[in-house]
Length: 334
Image (cartoon, rainbow, N blue to C red; front, side, top):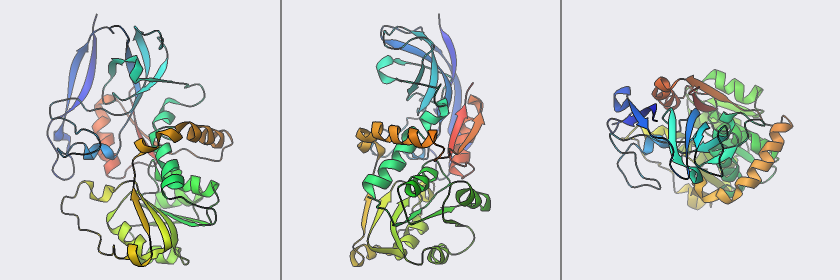
């Protein structure tokens, strides 16, 4: 017995901003699970900025996607057939074979999650990789201390919305965010408790940031790179820390200009460090325990944007790259 499943492939390597023609939706037939395997009906899947980098044929910390082969990424689904003693039919599992309706994989590459205490999408966002990225990046990489000023670029995204809230809960004196629309700015301040935020499209980023950080910046959590990174370096205090999480402003621009004021790292004795969440997996249980408590107590709000249907997965991915999401972009498949 086989199961038909739609799956997205990379049809061509994008040049600049990806287009729908760079992707191809095909149907594959999956056999019944073999020993130790499970067949999963995916319920939700993730689209993330880092997936854009994997579409380039360049060495990186993870292998690039291959042309004419299936894409992959985080997903949560329901087990519909199992040949594993450890995972039962009906279990909800987190795994790495998104971008498809059904996934056949070894049970050891799944993790059973409890969708009775949190929705499936939470394990792709607030309780998943973006949440741990925010937690470890702010507390371990940037080493935020109470009573410091924190600036978060891309603050309305999956990671940024959580960084700002964690900073507030951990005692930051001032939390500032940047976003790409007036509505996102309003959301950051009125709903998530940022002290202030600005629309980077409204004028000089450097001027707006200076107005909102009269005493400078102690910690900068950067998801954007480019002009916002350069502007933030001008405002950093002595011994400030910069955690480089992403550079989405440059992912689709091969001609992006460099940062022109890196000498400030010397004069201000700034620490700037890039990081990967993979290096902080040992913090996962501690993070889940603390974040779960905040969620139960209503101290953290979850921002999610949904696109429905496997046919629209690419639309969700491209929309995320254009900044159309508030919080985590999730594709619902069921």
